[in-house]
Each structure stands twice: as structure tokens, then as C-alpha cells.
Amino acid sequence: MIRHYLDNVTLGLEALENGRKPPARFFENVCTFARTFTDRYHHFKEEHVLFVRLAEKHQGAIDAQLDALRHQHERGRALVGEVAGALEGYRKGDEQMTGRIVEAIAAYAALLRRHMHQEDHVFYPMVLEAFSGDELAAVQSAFAEARARSGERTFETSHALVTEMGSLLVHMT
Image (cartoon, rainbow, N blue to C red; front, side):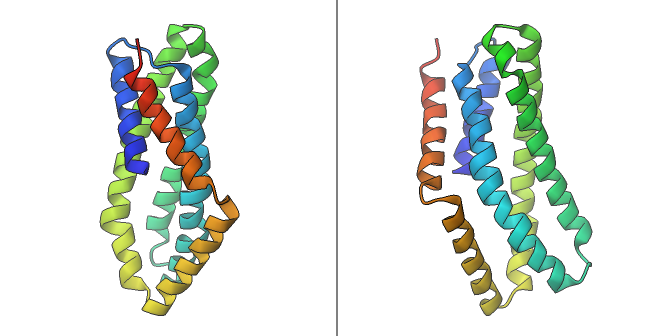
């Protein structure tokens, strides 16, 4: 779902760069998805489950790598905040605010691509190597608790946001 979200973010950016303006609702969905699914669900599991367990397992040896991933999460939050902060001006046709959204979305999309690549090719293989089968089962159990805490409809609601983003782009004038 996050990859589909990133595809939509990229398409929205391309539309802006080509002088077409997605509706403000598109960028509201960008922010809502990032704050709910990405942050409160996905990053929460990484920061409060995986990072903690990996740090304990490696006794400080990989703190720099974990700090780099945390920094990327924080940078993503800041960029989403920039988009949210420029939305009112974007709605009013303020070109300066549109420019801020273009810059923040471009940086955010690049950050997400880089971050996902690191997760897929460095972080997750490190997790699989570091943990035994029992430890991975404990991580999965902690993930299930996080899923339950985030609410049963998190996936459905987030999927609906991503689907609406795509629809808003298709129906742009």
C-alpha cells in the first residue's frame, strides 16, 4: 500500500510540475495517510518494536544506522508538515504556497524512495539475520498488538485514502 501511495504522490508532483493542480483534497490525503498509516502504524512498529529490539541485540553497535532511519522518519514528518502548512494558500491559488508544496512533495517522494530501498535491502535483511525464529515470532506478536491498538479499520481507511488519491488525479481538469 505504501508503494501505491508513493506512486500517487509522484503522479501528483508530476502534475504540479506540468502546471496542472490536483485538488487540495489530494494533498490532504497525502498528509492524512502519512500521519496515520505511515507514522502511527508503520513507523511506530519500527521505532518502538524493531529498533528497540535490534539496539538491545547489538548492544549499541548499530545505533548509527538506527538513528539514520529515525532521522528519515522525522524528516518525512517535517516535510508532511510543510505540505499541510501550505494547503490553505494552495487552495487560494497562492503560487508561493504551490511552490512550497512542490518542493516539499519532491523532497518527501525522494526521501520515501531512499528510505524504502534502505529498509528492503539493509534493514529488513538485518532483522532476519539478527533474530532467531522465536525472536521473530515475538516481534510478530508485538506487531499484532500495535495493529490492534491502531484500530481494526486502519488498513481499510488507509487503502481508501490511497484509492481516492488516484481517483482525484484521474479526474483532474
